[in-house]
Amino acid sequence: GAVVSQHPSWVICKSGTSVKIECRSLDFQATTMFWYRQFPKQSLMLMATSNEGSKATYEQGVEKDKFLINHASLTLSTLTVTSAHPEDSSFYICSAWPAGRVSQPQHFGDGTRLSIL
Amino acid sequence: GNSVTQMEGPVTLSEEAFLTINCTYTATGYPSLFWYVQYPGEGLQLLLKATKADDKGSNKGFEATYRKETTSFHLEKGSVQVSDSAVYFCALSDQNYGGSQGNLIFGKGTKLSVKP
Image (cartoon, rainbow over all chains, first blue to last red; front, top):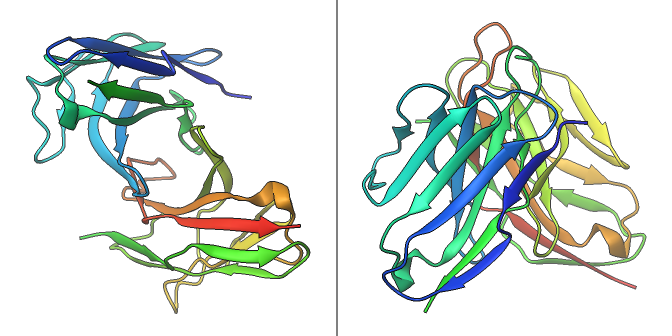
């Protein structure tokens, strides 16, 4: 079945560091990927829609300069949290939508737990 | 705008008990509806889906029926197991053009704990 790999699964770093999270579709191509953020005991909130070959579409209230998204190929999207601070600590989850298979649902990665000290 | 409301947890059941997690939605058009499950420390896994009214999604003993008249998509299982302990999210897709799907709108999640 369709698999989405997200890396790293867990990262701890100091305040002010930039952190890159990768989302890869392993056995399908994805023109569209989504990045979500999940706070403890809360639901997933869509941050942005990543489109291959074009700029990402950010949801209202999400700082595009803070959360840089690059969708460089049909199998890879990256989210970079720039100059991370403790309030950026969260669980980040990506999903990918198989290109050309419009009846299929999104496939989710296992998430990245980001802890900023 | 589109939204999903699901019953708040946590829900604690004994093994083999009957499970119902309520989910209602507000949407324009004809959204697709989903239930996702999140096991501790993991990402989301699609549990089941329904793309049109009266469709029944089912998987691993779980069922949910797309009820347009009541705008509901309640999740049910006749006999839960300890391994079903997880957080369950109801979701809808806010675009449906010829079967295509846009981003998902999630409910707040319901934590289920099943005791032996």
